[in-house]
Image (cartoon, rainbow, N blue to C red; front, side, top):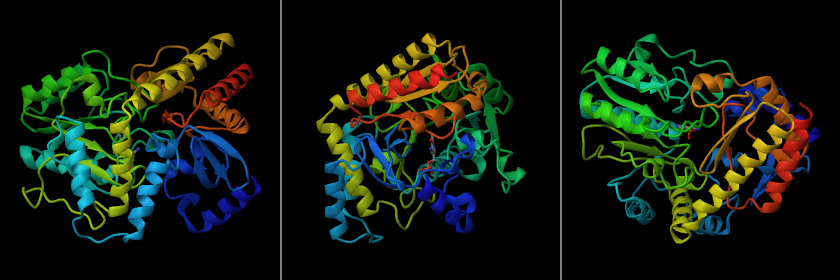
Length: 421
Ligand code: PMP
């Protein structure tokens, strides 16, 4: 801990809160963040010589584990040729072709630099295409930190107790309407009230920024039907649940509901900052979207290598899901054994425990989790060498590098921590 503490002390003098993204500061669990030196397979190694089984996986991208040779070697090859050109490259074409090939409904891809950028651009596209201004989002869903989406947001915006943000003008969020996830009636009311004004409904098809909450049967189908009825576009934000996390490449394939626009990022770049926006934008269409580093050759190399690997090894999804299922079941068993009052949700390779005795199917249920208990659970697991999301309203991510031994170690730790109450 000494070295991490020392680095954190230094960091706080020159970086706001000592970090470059709030959740990393460990404030929700009131601990000093571990400074990470390197990662390999299922493990991350901190500056104090400790290592942990990693269930953050860079918040999703490390589907194949850290430092996977196929991805690393592709990146090393790309780096030798230069880091960025601001000009088109063959890899971008191959990447887009591969996505179109792997997912039948994808027609076009626009590469961007982050999930925030992907969603922000998708919104502009939806507004440009419909000529309407309003959007409907869901309480507890997080879509990055662009102004008009920082309203009733999930993820660390939630854990930090700031569902919105200072610096976002009322005038900008007046077009943002908020509905309840898994409650179609709450969407219908808004679409009726603002008839003809709603450009789009944006949703995480698997809500993974309020812990993990899956769509109730008929919810996504209902959203599709409501959007069609009201001439609104349906955007699936798959930055968190897409790219193999839900059990298929995209959640919309798993649930068989087609959005009009789908956003992805993270694993698309194998951990590099890229995102995708599937539609026709400038220079073909009237919706402006651009980026100096978009389609960056190193990011493309990583994304391509990871996608190619998944294409060649489709069994990856089943392996991830099997591990996640066994993890969730083991956690439920430990909770029952110790009367811990914990509900565990799992979809694909996403898992989340909630410290509440009843099932969690809505944002309201999720908010009922005892975050103080989550903090104690986090600390207990960290002490036993298991690195989890340092906040309740996040997911656990598993990778193909996690082994049976890792699973057993994790469940042993869970058993001990739940036994402590
Ligand atoms: N959308 C969703 C669903 C997300 O989970 C996130 C980040 N976790 C974002 C958008 C923003 O992505 P980024 O942090 O890459 O900007």
